[in-house]
Image (cartoon, rainbow, N blue to C red; front, side, top):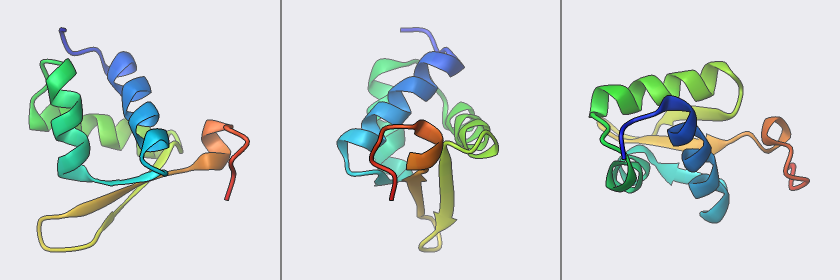
Length: 81
């Protein structure tokens, strides 16, 4: 499937919900890359888009590793923490 920021954003949120609201950036990228023709640069742009719009928070947990955490209040799942 061709990369679409909105479809990929929706799928990223779904994946985070399925995984308890948190994933490592590389793990999320690998899952999204299977469905979308997405470069790592486009993935970083997607994370920035989701973070600016309040859907996720991204934090460094290692030299090359980031944690991607879902903002349950913004997503409105009823599972707010």
